[in-house]
Length: 291
Image (cartoon, rainbow, N blue to C red):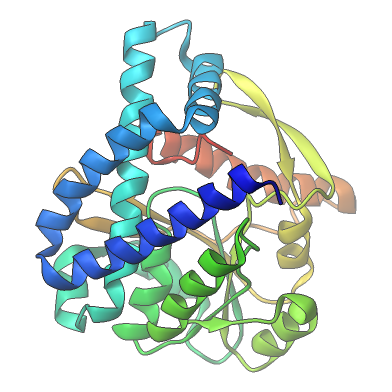
């Protein structure tokens, strides 16, 4: 690793440690307000991510928004993710009562229709909103542990720190070297498996219309979900203007709509891509435009 990159990674790690201390000493509302200041500083200091976000937003919105409006969206995106980090660093201290004050459930009937603990369930999520809150809510409020396979982060110290936080709130982190077997075991034990289904690990993709353009969407994780013999339920966590959240359970993704397997799988994936598009149109600053 280059020295400059190592210094940068260490700086990010110690910034996270500092924020973790901050949320222990000040009310969450205050910490979220402070995070907006950090986000603004980060927006102007981290040129690589800023340029990537601006490029992605420009590709989608340049025909409808001015450069000033696109810049405003990019800055608001930074602020959303800064708030999400603060929330992640603080949720280990939240009580079930606090969770219920901050989080509302929408579409619970969609969950109840396909899962009662008598069979496994795959929940598919995207890098939208503060998705970390969903698993924590399941574990702390409903007492239902969620199995997750964490994406490997760029820095081992940050990766270890975040996974330790996830374990503290009740998530079950599956071994990355044995993820397939561990996932199948969890489903056979009638447990819930959460998959970040838009994560690009460099495997096969499929092209779909997306917003005003198109997207090469990674399908490896969704292929596992498709081949599983359990329901596949999309969920999204949506930040509200007052920094409360809605966990939205959508209807399960449909299988078996086409006789030809490849066409049926593409239809299966298209349902999820369409949902992501719908949520982005509602609140574009909550999507991970830096990806």
